[in-house]
Image: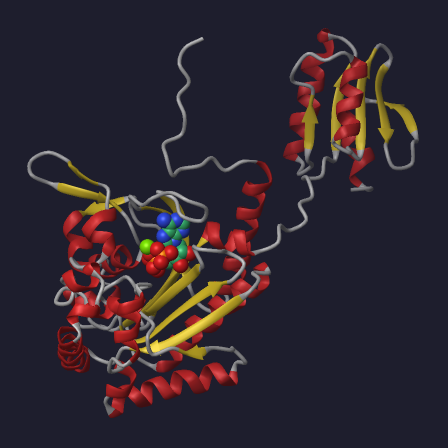
Length: 413
Ligand code: ATP
Ligand code: MG
């Protein structure tokens, strides 16, 4: 035998019940998002590296160390998409969607690629369900997005959910706050972890994320962005909260909430599940009012979220999986009758029935065992004296003309 070739590290095959659970997730998402006015979008699996460098942010973990980037010739650099927001904004610009009634509401379920250390719930190719609503800064868009996400997670049966919410304000507030935070970090530099110290200028907000004890102490007395919001941002945040309250969505305001992407403004949120262990993040999102302009489009606001498909499934009890029903199993007693049996199965499918045919040369006894295993509603056996049609529910069996099989089963199915 030749040497075995395995799936690359951090990737997986989707099989059997897992495939059915994923299909169900797509149906749940579609059933909640499309009635709310979200239309499906699919973008390419790779994009110009510049889109992510600019759109995700040079200082983020994603751009610094997680991207799969390759040279495509003639100096062109491409990157397998590590996230969906920047590509959807790119498509919004490219197709002139700012001329449509705003906001433009889009949803996607696609695979993403990040060079990470693989572990349970963390893969190098993974799937995200996401939405983006571009073109309005109305707080109702933020609240609606969060309510829809919460509904999807609830319908899937995700356990141990917790929603944390905050607001980052506008870039101006953030810049001013950032200076104060950097000053606080500088004043306490000797107590910080090396990693945080190295990134004081690059990304001081990430210090709130640290597990390092000294850093945590320093951060306990750090100034908070929520306290620095201006009047308008504060009102926006209050309105989002009021609408969530009205919709009965439970959340905690967490002023230390930080997310890995640079482009967020105002509303920021994250769903975690304590059913997940270390990789507890189920979904995250927020408002990104400067992003479309940053990547070369008009100055339009936007808000969105992305939820990890594998983590949503890990956090949800597996749904009862029923095998697809089989209306008719077509068996035959000898190979000379295979073509007749084949024709009946094809005709039955054309008529909308779930029909199966013997495909592996089993004996008649073996075929009937197969039909039984599939729990077929009817079995048609091509034999010496014509077609014998058996109703597996009543046990009734009769000889019929091949052309009339459909007529016989139609009424019962
Ligand atoms: P984490 O803190 O776990 O690395 P993140 O902040 O990088 O998450 P986002 O970029 O916000 O995650 O992506 C949204 C969601 O996608 C996450 O909440 C998570 O459910 C899922 N996700 C992110 N990275 C991975 C991965 N490598 N494998 C599987 N799911 C992932
Ligand atoms: Mg990450």
